Amino acid sequence: MRDFERVHSRFSLLGEINVESNYAKENISTEQPPPRQKARLSRTHGDKERPRRDQTPSRQGSQAINGSSLLDLSLPKEARLLKRAEFLRVYEQGARIEGRFMTVFILPGEKGLHRVGITATKKAIGKAHDRNRAKRLLRESFRLSKAELDTVTQRFDWVLNARRSILYGKLEKPLAEFRQIVAKIGKENLPAKHTKERENIED
Picture 1 (cartoon, rainbow, N blue to C red):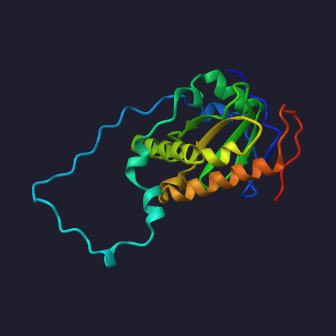
Picture 2 (tube, rainbow, N blue to C red):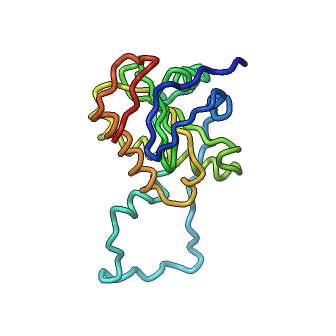
């Protein structure tokens, strides 16, 4: 496979803007996660006493975001990048955004809706169960940001590459970062057609 062209248009949330020409080859992945089985709770010891109201944690919003049931929900097929060629197109022609928990590539789409592809490589993340968790967190960050994505007039194809730091927190952190990236893109009003020498986006 030939070396891919350098991604010229990019901005960084952390000041990291170096792009390797073989980034796509190292990170591309279109494998889909295996179906998840529903968890079963043991009832061998009977019902546990319910906590009193004054003992109920106050951070209900964070608990709802980080609830395991959310990670069982999947995106519809039409909202996902499934083909290798689709990933390559975004890598080769898209803009790159560096975050703490993810590296994001975006390219104006041709389908009239936001679509996403998720990758978590063995080199970046490690073992299979860690890669699966990282991909679930990225997928949920995208899915739970529908309201924010709908405010962006231009529809994009997104590729989200997991960074290892995503394993050390719960969903609320990568979710907040992705929403920040979406807001930044919407505010900057990126052009509908990609240009090879797009200006870097500054804070």
